[in-house]
Length: 272
Image (cartoon, rainbow, N blue to C red; front, side):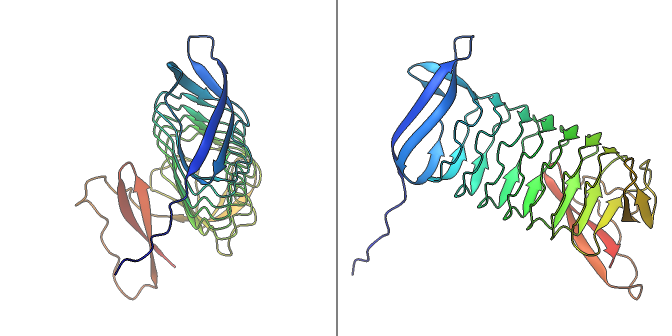
């Protein structure tokens, strides 16, 4: 017996408006399409290489469910995918060096994002109010996180700050109401005000022995804000067999936090 198969959602009548990048390539300035579904942005249009996505070029494209950005693109402009409410996934190539301001702000269906290790900075409000975003991988190439970058990401439960980050802007993780722990892999960065304001009850900053600028059981950051903090002990190695010893039983309930470092998840243990 034959069973009907649901038609796959697709985009049709895809059109791009472009302008010259001044070097023989093209920058996409506007997009339109009928239907709905995922989009593979082309690496070339009319034989010319697509090198950039201009500011607000895909804003309010409610029919986009996924986007793959080609490796020819090196720049993504301010607010490029702002308010793409049905966008659940984005593939960002390693050719991109920065995530600009408001780029994915209010993409309320996005659940996870992996930022490539070519990115040096995350702009202000880049992922603000992505309230279904549960996980984000911040690579060790990133040195700065802008103001309100992840504010209002109400489903995010944990975040790993790599040792490359030297500054975090005000309210970067403000009102992330499910965020229970932020693990710093290196020294304390320069912090704006209320970076972790209004997070989950019991929110804790975790750091490793040898890191400078932290104290426990509380930590006052460079802006003067104070957070509960926990020294997590020695930094785990990156070898798959190099995991910290399990603490002896009977000293309290142990919470397991999986830390993403490079291409591996590393377990850390802390007393709940």
